[in-house]
Amino acid sequence: MDLAEIWRVVCRRWYVLLPGLLLTAALTAGVYLLVPVEYRSQSTVTLLNSRKATEAFDGNPFLSTQASLTGMADGLARNLNSDESRAALKSQGLTGQYEAKIADNAQGPFMWLSVTGTDPARVLKSDELLTSYAEKRLNEFQAGQKVPAEAMIRMATIVPPQTPEPQTKARVQYLAMAGAPGFVLSLVATFFAEARARGRAARAVPEDAP
Image 1 (cartoon, rainbow, N blue to C red):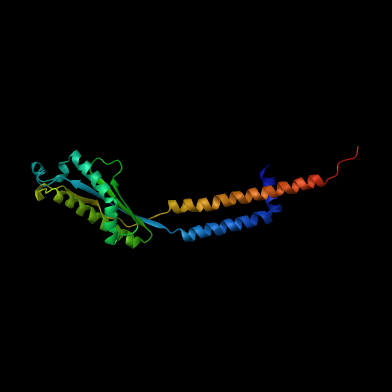
Image 2 (cartoon, rainbow, N blue to C red):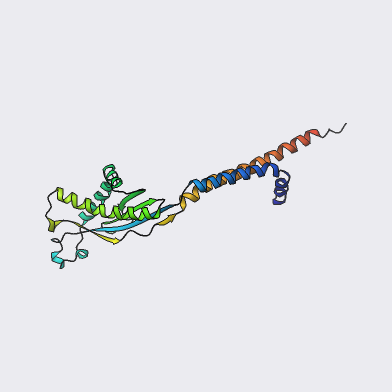
């Protein structure tokens, strides 16, 4: 079946195709309206050696790195993702979904702190709250172990919470899931109706007498 024949079938069975397309369009529009645009803000922080550990480097913490800092960053990220921290952050006003993790391909104790939500202003505020809370938890860990102030690991913000950017990938996927199957089923119904009509026409033609 070539394109010309497909077009002729569509034109003949438009009354089958059109309702399916209208239903698909309505479903897609519903998904578009019901699935809101999500926004994401992210900050990047790093853990730094203590002031005492950097004395040999003239106090420059970026010249003094240790593998233990990466381990501490991983432990801090796990704690921030815990139910306890989520409850604490929610009580302080954080909204949306957040994630704390070691930065991809990180060559040191770098962490990504990101927040996703539907309100850009709240997303930015929540990411700022998460970033400050991460430093607070780091200090609480060490204070709980009675680490002297001059020996405490520190946190520095490399990239502050960024202006929230729209995340359209998930929404596009939902729209495709709503539209593509409906379009395909409409075409299938159209050609099914055409096949049945041709079958009835063939049975209606009397066979030639011998």
